[in-house]
Length: 249
Image (tube, rainbow, N blue to C red; front, side, top):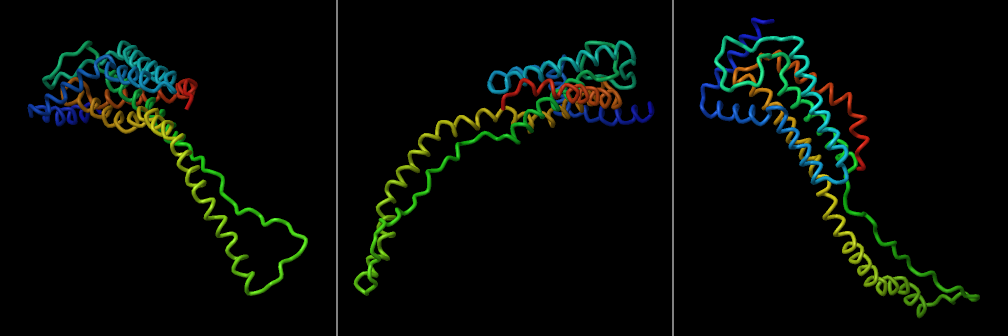
């Protein structure tokens, strides 16, 4: 296992020889230091998505919790950092297993991704209220049945058509009024769901990039990153019910 870890890490660290790759890997590693990127994402979501503010803050707490747990495990396992490659960044600690970057990244991707999945299932949108269908007025009751005849038939057939023609402007006005009344709600509703949807789309690939960056800069073995990701995802899943308790959408 250690030999495989060494080989994979060496192969990924070799990509850091490209200055552009090294620069991107350093930026991602610095952004994920102490979970700062994910905590900022959680607070930003809480600020712009008032309907789910509680859920965003609870998800942020889960992310911070995963980071703290990973640091505790590091002190127990005490696995040293890779020594066979030259690191591209400095590290806050000497221990490698599990990756705290990976733990906080996976926790944020899972926790905030659940908010996006919930918003997708309950998509708020414009009110679909439609004006009541216009029915033709019933003909007035009459004690006598009109006598059939060529002079009477065209008038009888034209009565419903005339009623529909007379009602058409009123029906159009009602539809326009309904659309006008619903417009502010329709414009505001998508904005309320933008934050969790963006989190669902953006955070998982960004979290994967942060995890990968820790190997490109040469400070974690692949098994460190895998263990950290599992720890973070498990923490978020275990806290899912508590986190959703703060959602109103």
